[in-house]
Image (cartoon, rainbow, N blue to C red):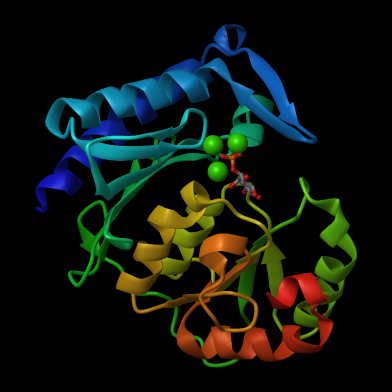
Length: 267
Ligand code: IPD
Ligand code: CA
Ligand code: CA
Ligand code: CA
């Protein structure tokens, strides 16, 4: 196993165990509001501290980028750990047992290893660039769907950026006439992991942040899938407007979406 994947797994399991323990004791969870429809809890922050501490022990010189603490610069800016300590905070607060820890390591901008860990199901999704993606050690391959007929597409509503609501609904309406059904699970990291596992055929969301997709992106690619922005390019790295699935599904999704994109979503 890649040594950094080993540390990433250790950190994700520690954080996941902490989250799962606190899921059982809702009185210990303190939620506060970060922005419109956007929450964080003491457990997000504690999980993040555990992850940072675990990484720092082995790699004190690496740079760490986390959702809650921001960028913790290290001597080595070429190696960046991108961390979402708890993806699916709203589910966690509502006691909906679907959330994950996501950790990815980027070296000179390229993601090398990734972990997405679902502590409630004890499902550990891992990937190393060029060496495939695994779920609890078993090799993953994405869905083999050819067109959109019969597909299940995962998505996330732009609940923090409602200025996109109208174009988003147009896209949903267009795709819905072609696919079988949608899922909105509340964890983008798990949505991407599920694309990698072939549990859903495709995924799209507006305005994700790097920590939401850094881990899941490598899982999808290593399972044979494609990740791009709404026009098929790479701008999702900055806009967070993301489409994922096997190459044929992505091509069909983009074709349906094309005429419904606002100017902002074409970027
Ligand atoms: C959120 C989840 C959700 C997605 C949001 C993300 P968080 O992450 O991934 O599924 O729709 O865009 O912000 O805040 O729970 O880590
Ligand atoms: Ca958040
Ligand atoms: Ca997230
Ligand atoms: Ca989070």
